[in-house]
Image (cartoon, rainbow, N blue to C red; front, top):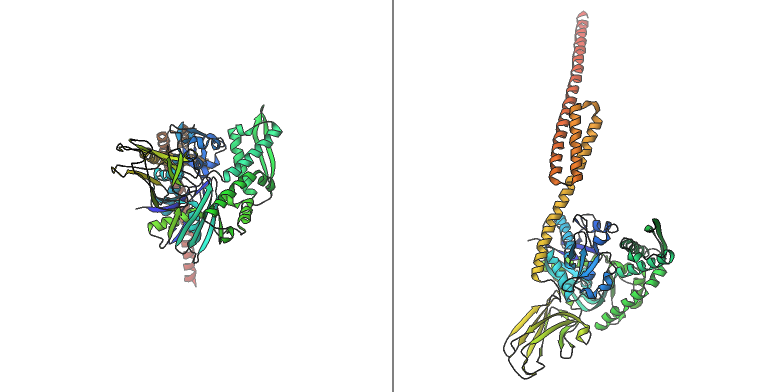
Length: 634
């Protein structure tokens, strides 16, 4: 049985944590960082990179570098078509209408679940290296406002990565769990979570051993990426005014703009002005063009005015649903890297009349909370009860296209509710159950989660048959719907996976591909290490020959130099068998050369020692004889 970890699968960065000795510990990546960029990239030879190495090469390889994939998770392409235009890689529509990323380097479409699984695999491997044992279970966090499709997609990503997902929990809830684990009193807190791609506000009651969510609201299309985007658009517009060139149409330039915007946003959290200097951003008639813009904090706040307005609505909604006023809150906890922006902190202060609590690390607290929940499920943490809620209302479409809510938003989960419906026309042989999620009164304005049919209804006048529809939400917030004809006992049920989401066969296929890719990636790493060792050996042998000079027999030297040249040629040719063969031959020659050199040195040292010993013996004997004769005379 392997270990269970908590994972914050973020839009821009991801974190993994584990319980050790009763305390949550954030696990550093193999590169030594406590957070890992949620970025996956592919080289033209098919080699895959994840994390900091992938992000580092994004500027020179924008079309094959996938970032912010979480924004497309569980979405139809039509729902995210505008956001698809912002990224340097190609986002397209698959046969089911879902958004997928196309990677030109390998000429393949990847679902958001597959890309997310690659990120999770990297976190899993780093955790295994740290713990020295396998990791096969996880608690993964999602934004509180993720709908059923997005939650299921996240759970699928965990399975593809080779882990059993014990629980999907909301990010603000995880943060409150980390904040409240050692609280002795009772507090009502508001968790303000502004991450890279999503925004959530949750109101919770936190006391010793109990975390109860009272309400949650948010915007799954608002986050740090959007604040970056307003800077990108500003820089592009300034450059266009000056040079007449639209940088938004150039993918490599766009990637540089995006990285510069992120850096500027971070710098403006600590200082009031920053200079954005991008030399050689583009060229016209072989003449390089440079971008040099000074951005002030006040200008950034002016550009972000619309985004700040979008923050207020979910904030007010969460308080209204919790039936609370701002002055009734005990604490306001800031979560997510984007909450560090001064204008965000100032807005929170205005809305709550409270100084935000900064006792938690906004980048790590969600993963820490997930690790604590993992500890609860694994039996390591006792006496903690977590009561979460469903973020959106769930129900069915009724006659006239009306959305009839069966489970209201902010209902504590797990929960199960039933409602009885009937037929609309005489002798209706079946009914279609259309499952919806949202808050709008008309069915067409809400998110469709799926449809199924209950057949075999006996002929009867309209409104006579009794069809009981039951909604059952588990602790992950994932829904199962059943319909039963109370007259005949006929029943039909489905687990909602969201319209167009992966089915079990697709998940199994992707799991096998992930395992294969893990093996392929290991081979690629081993091959890279072999080439590195070969380069080191060739350099070492060349240095030895140079340093030895005339001490090496000319015939041996010529033969060894040929072996060095053969190894360098093999490394350049990328043939593993040829490299290994040339490496072994040169290594053998190197060993033989070393033995001869040591033997020659040993022989020289022995001859010199013999001369010293002989001279010494003679001198001593002479002294002894003279001394003896002298004594006899006396």
